[in-house]
Length: 198
Image 1 (spheres, rainbow, N blue to C red):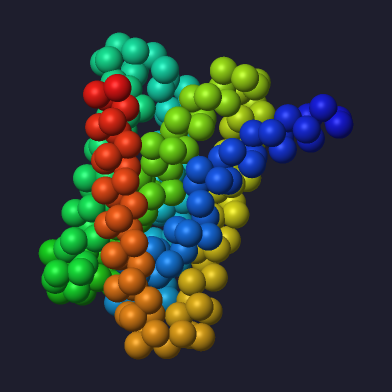
Image 2 (tube, rainbow, N blue to C red):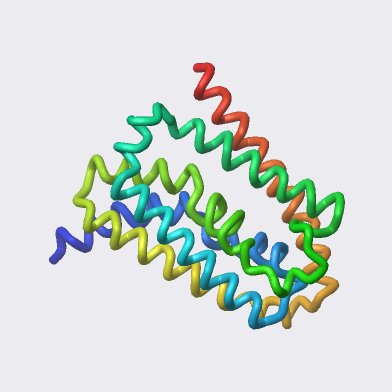
């Protein structure tokens, strides 16, 4: 039992750092600020399910697919960075992330960019790939699911955070967060390109 707990800790921590659940929360608020409480809950559920699906698929067939297609982790960095950069620029310039008059009726942001590449993006996929080579797949999957539960719980508390900050506060924070998101996206693209060129 002690060995299992140790293995879980050794796999949980890298995934926790890679997933950055706390850092994802302000971005979740920014993307869902115009939605209702019900919309935020649905988006949280969809984001978590999407992240789980992407992560599980990657664990099961990721290595084979990447090898078959000749795709490197650096390619994920560039692709994920581009998606996040587009989302950030749209919000900063247009004040919205999607072409929709009512964001409260749109749950697809739970799939992209929240579920992937935000919750499960290049960093998490790379961590999963690395951990699978060092630990049993059941241990890695358990740690991955535990991290997703933590992320889901934080997303579900978003309504209380919105009530505390009020709409003006959320809007102001959202602008700052989206600027940071743009910088993170550029960093991802830069790291991916440098890895490819190196």
